[in-house]
Structures are given as C-alpha cells and as structure tokens.
Image 1 (tube, rainbow, N blue to C red):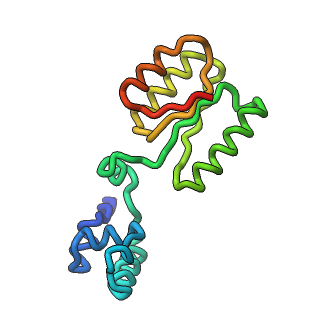
Image 2: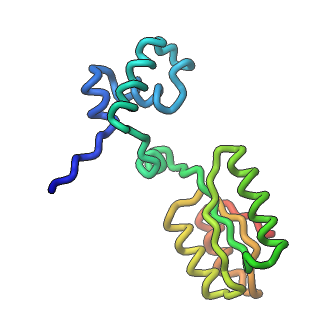
Length: 152
C-alpha cells in the first residue's frame, strides 16, 4: 500500500500549463490584483478542488517568513480572567487573519520556558504573555532575537 504523493503547486501549474505564480495568485486570493482572467481563475480553482489541493501553510510561512500565528501564554486556563482573555484574543486574532497557539503554563516558570521554546521554534509571528514568576531573562532573550512580545 503506497501513498499518493502530495500534489504541489508546481505540479498543479504544470498540469494546467500555467506558471506557478499564476496558480499561487489565484489560490491566495490575489488574482484580481494581478488581472488574471476569470476563466483562468475558474480553471485553477476547479483543478485544485478536483485534486483536493490546499496551500501548504508551513511552506508558505517559510517562504514569506510569516506564519500568521501568535503564541498566547497564560498561567491558568481554569481562571476565568485568563479564559475570557484567551477567548477575546482568539476572536480578535481570527478577525485579523491570525491563528492562536494557546499554552497554559500552569503557573510554572519551567512550563512557561518550555512553551516559549516551542512557540519560538514554531516561528510564531509574535507572543502575548501573561508571565509567571519574576525572572524575565528568558523573555528578554527572545525579544533580543527580534520576537515581537506583548506582556499582559
């Protein structure tokens, strides 16, 4: 039982005899800005639907250096203040085209540091942190690396 190789944007473009940039612009909703004809847009969308093609967000994030993801670290999700904060942050982020990775640090500096490592390595676009403890060196080190950070 072999698995079917994943259809790439290049393969889709080759199948349609179009450039990768045309296919990309259609699938990323930028076809009108580049004056791509309605017929070509329809052709690309139908082929993508037929093959079950979707944009590889990881590859897109690497290329654009943007993941449209924000890390949210809170000390205790069971605390109604933090759960309501997380809810509102998620709604606002979604409204602006971002996703949230939520980390409950369990009021532990160790868990907080592990979560910060995880989020940094996942290349989130920024961090929203309700920090625990008094040692800010770990957060300062990420900020020094260029990570946008907001403390709550």
